[in-house]
Length: 280
Image (tube, rainbow, N blue to C red; front, side):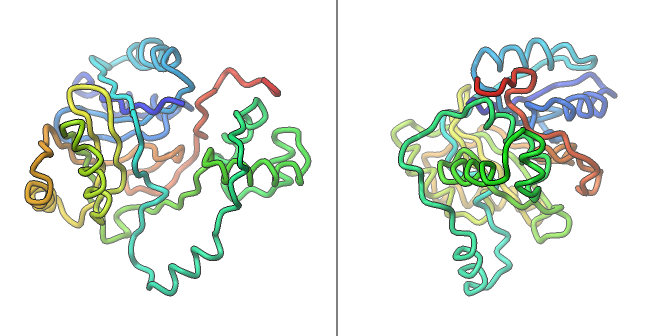
């Protein structure tokens, strides 16, 4: 699986139309309007590099209003949204949830995803609360088989569970993405420090002019400068190359959002859209 962070420049007046068009693409998980450096930043999941090329050239570049694209491929994902916490629960409450939600043990042997798995994952993206009976009806499996498959997908980390919230309802209403350069031998150390910061929600090494991308949630826009100062003190080997504040999100992990971050619909995340075949 390839994860790509794609920056998109648009003609004046076309950003909204491009964002809405991208939101309908199953391989595009997230669409964000950005202030500074690029008009849109999207996160895409595809099975391989050939499919990424097809997405860039055959789907994104041909959209009316798109003037340029730049793709950074994640070489390793160190932290992402399913592991981030709002930090509003007490230690006891958090422990209760961890105990109740303890994942099943790993299956022991990595099992390649087959066609049935690839059909099941988009259905889970459509409705993570769907019953095993409903999921089985959608993909042609019995409920017990669905339960076993979902348990294996979770245990093998092929499936991650996450609960999102409209940012304006939290103490973290501002989001920003930062690009940085770190000497390769110092990258593990930099990542360890970044993941201790409560603001850091996503952290990934990437291809391109900068080798590190991370997303933060902040209390105010002014906190971008405070965070940069803190990073300079704790990680002198890290050089910030660019930063961009999120103005709004059109799509977040398959959910279509209004201007206040509320869900209006869903386009399930499906890296294999158009290529499903049971047992393949």
